[in-house]
Length: 131
Image (cartoon, rainbow, N blue to C red; front, side, top):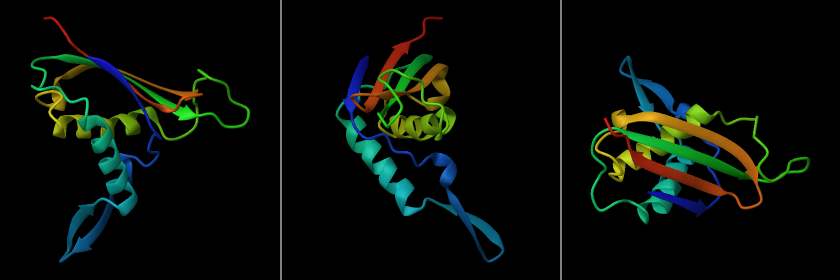
């Protein structure tokens, strides 16, 4: 399975969860911006979800395509924040919730890239890994 979703890539990441203390114990929560990013990703990815979750080990290839800014060109690697690993965590959480795979622990191969692009969006390829 592979597809491209033209969209604005959320720049808020899973790493931005917050914590406050209630009765001496830490309680983690998602700030409004992170909740909105999760909701946006969920809305975009829901239309591509498979009828059945992929079973067994999978390879996930994801390309985050950010809109061009002054001094960049189409296809140029994006070397500024957010970090790829932080972008992928939120994406995998959403894909897991939408049943793209049985569990995100089954993503045994992961290729994540970020670029500047004329057409901003998210490219995803998800393939079964043969044992």
